[in-house]
Each structure stands twice: as C-alpha cells, then as structure tokens.
Image (cartoon, rainbow, N blue to C red):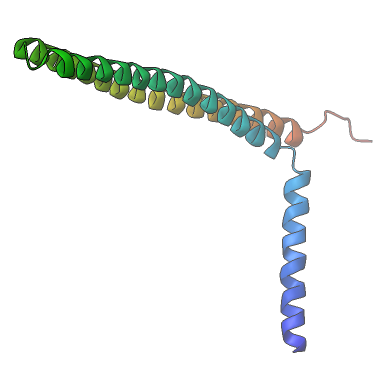
Length: 142
C-alpha cells in the first residue's frame, strides 16, 4: 500500500511542477490570448452565417406557403398556374441551397484565415518574448 501512496504522491508532485512551470511561463500568454481571440472572431463569423441561413429558411417557408396556396386554390382550374408556382418555388429553393453552400465555404475560409493569422501573430509575440528573455545584458566584467 505504501508504494501506491508514493506513486500517487510522485504523480501529484509532477503535475504540480508542470502546472507551476506553465503558469509562470510568459511565453504561454500570447498563445492563450490569440487562441481566445480567434475563438471570439469565429463565433462572430458563425453568428453572421447563421443569421443569413435562418433568413433564407424563413424565405423558403414563405415561398412554400405561397406555392401551396396557388396549388390549392388554382390547381384544379389552372394546372399550368400550379406547375408554374411549383417550378418557381423549386428554382428559388435551389438558389437558396447554392447560397447556403457558397456562404458555408466562405465561412470555413474566413475561419481558417483567422486561425492561421492569429497563430502567426502568437508565434511572433512568443518569439519576441523568448528573444527578450534570452538576451544577455551588455555588462563589463569586473
């Protein structure tokens, strides 16, 4: 039983050492800052995409309501009007789907750009901090 306690204590001490090393290391600051900045910007982009997507879904619902109304009221008397209403609805639905795909691809592209640019900035800041930390002072020996 004593071995287990020693093993657990050793693991706990190792974790504490790693935690204090990471918490005290100023080079982790830019990485964390840029990670969360990227997350915030990605959320903004996703929100914009979602807003436009829901707008198109509402348009699709209104378009379907209009088409079904024409089919229900005019379909028996004027089959060509019903067919035109359905064809228009289908064409607009395909346009909305194409817009969904285009905006989805744009979203992924913008998010990838955000992550890459933030990572580059974080690396530059980390390099600068590292260079300052390892820079030797210009002192004269005594």
